[in-house]
Image 1: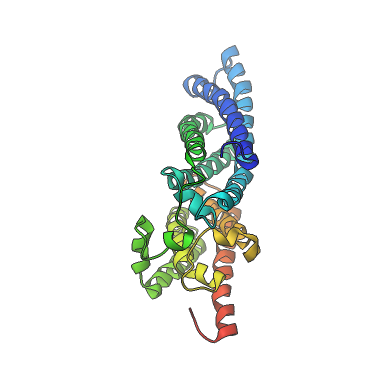
Image 2: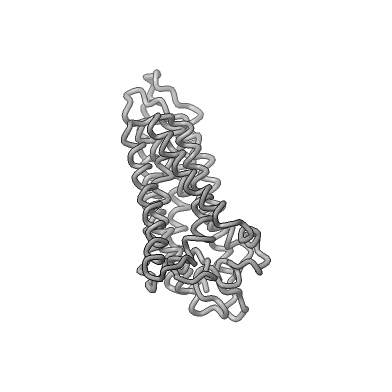
Length: 315
């Protein structure tokens, strides 16, 4: 499995990430320990040049990680064609013990690196660069997360057995499965939707009052609420099947790849809102967050409305 074109591409890029990240890590440690913006010494001048190099490396890593995450999901779908029992990426993820943890860690790292870029941009706006020590101190921690992700990714692909029977998404995402998510299927849809739309309404209220901490908190809560609602309720209207709850299948061409748009909207909206709690920004960040979150809510709601208009009933 390691030598399929898609997997080989990911592993090569991960190797490059690791090499560049190690350089940025070493520079970050030096900067974090010795940075003093008020100093005029040769050491400080050297650190300022090194901080520019380290920042460029970190920005490069993140700029590639975003499309690579999408390519990773695409690769899982492609691999599912040769694994017995798998119908989509869900089967591949479930085929190994590390798959689920890897997906979660990849999502966390996207948010962490995006936050780092926000902090870096704020730092560059000030002549005194007040966040330099903080941002490189954070990268020291983020570097560890990145290395764990790379190791987990190699472990997952290396441990996939083509001949081993795996579960399809229909059995994984069902109330009869033994997975952790199966307990969620006991939730009443009316309660779930009340939480979903109330969360969005609360977010809108905090946007009006410009309370950045509560607005950020509402966005943090919106992430799991949206994902659970998508799997348990809205996804069934995308598939037009009450028993189909897979969060991967609508990434495929049969559903016009709408899943990529859905997850992009959720990431952009929640990240912009979440970052406001840690980096003070202009009114523009509030608007961007609310815009993407609103489009996300409207898009999912339209699937339900259109199904009802076509069929006269709800699923």
